[in-house]
Length: 252
Image: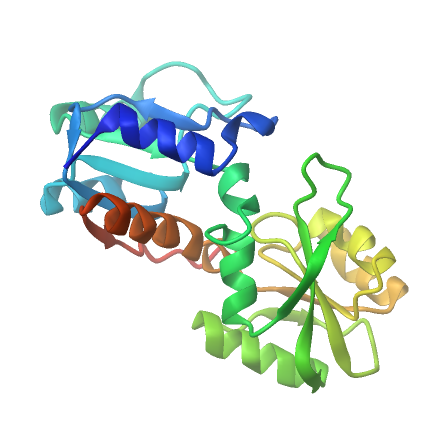
């Protein structure tokens, strides 16, 4: 057992949550019971994930995508009301970390994705953000564009959308999970042969072709499955807690 506030303070420090200017509040978003024995983690605090956490008897739900995003309707009605009502009825806390969970050098979404793709990390590339969110690494051996697409598909359980902007073999790879397709030009400037992110926008294909690098839209959800899981496992081991990661299917 651990006190909720002690766990929260540890996570805030571990993830350096205060260093980020983010789109939603990081840390405790909904306050539940004071003691934590069981954590359920997942990517997004959807109703399906909340229901799974309630069924598991969780004291705390740990996610990457929580609530209260900038620009969203602030009223507690409809879907938002149903989600919050379920959390409050269960006296379950909601703990959410967005950019801090992307950036952590070991437990973060980018670090975990790089491990699953077998990339040797070289460092970060400049994304115009502080801290920098883009990662740069190398494959153990060069791969064709199609072979790397197959490798991504095998690692994530779904084939990426591949824009073959380059012609040569891929050795140096840049990546940033989620909706980070806008960093593609920065990835090209960093000398990457390929760039991996979660989503694709209309300009992305043209930029990939004109900058001469392969682009892989591997899925927002699929690329960000592993940070919350890794953090949940870390907390379970540190504090002797029960932890279960619940993957709510999402094709996006």
